[in-house]
Length: 79
Image 1 (cartoon, helix red, strand yellow):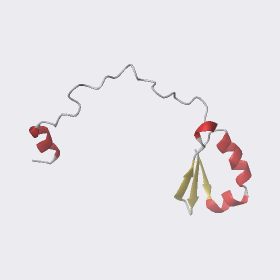
Image 2 (cartoon, rainbow, N blue to C red; image 1 turned 120 degrees about the vertical axis):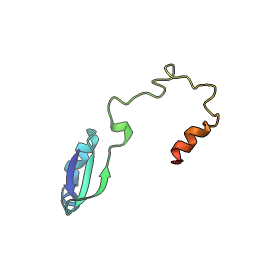
Image 3 (cartoon, rainbow, N blue to C red; image 1 turned 30 degrees about the vertical axis):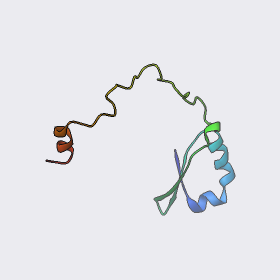
């Protein structure tokens, strides 16, 4: 990721558009503080992970939607 001051980006943005097209992310800053992050669109990224990559490796348990035990809920609530 590269970091660029907003004023600098406005002056020479064409150079950075090419870097976005190559898959790089840009962090815009003003006086050294982050203002915005510009990321390339998915169609410009290479080696995207396919949907359903782990579809056969995880099975949802039958009791997935059952309420949690009272003692676990109490622990979350600090009781």
